Image (spheres, rainbow, N blue to C red):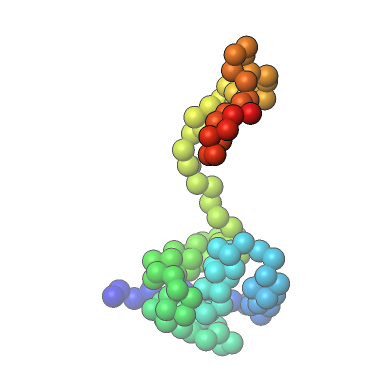
Length: 125
C-alpha cells in the first residue's frame, strides 16, 4: 500500500474538542465516527498513531472511510466532521401536487364509496 499522503496532527485544543464531542453522545453517529477516526489517526505526540487498518478494525469502518476522513481533515480542519450534502433523488411530487393529494385523501369519499369495508370475520359495517 502506498505511503499516507495526508497526516493528522491534532493540536491540544482540537484533541480536547474531539474528546468532548465523542463523550457527549448527542451528535449524529457518523459525525462521532469521524471524530473517533481523527482521534485514533492522530500522529502528534499525544496521539496513538494508529494505522488506517488498525483504525478501521477498531471502529468497524472501511479503510477508505479512514483515508477520506484524514484527507478531509487536512484540507478543511474540523469541518471534516460535517457531511457534504448528498444529491439524492428529486421528489416525485411537487409541493402543489402533494397539497392536492393531501386534500383528496382527507376529504369525504364520493357518493357510494363510504368508509365501509368487509372485515376478516366477513361482517360489514
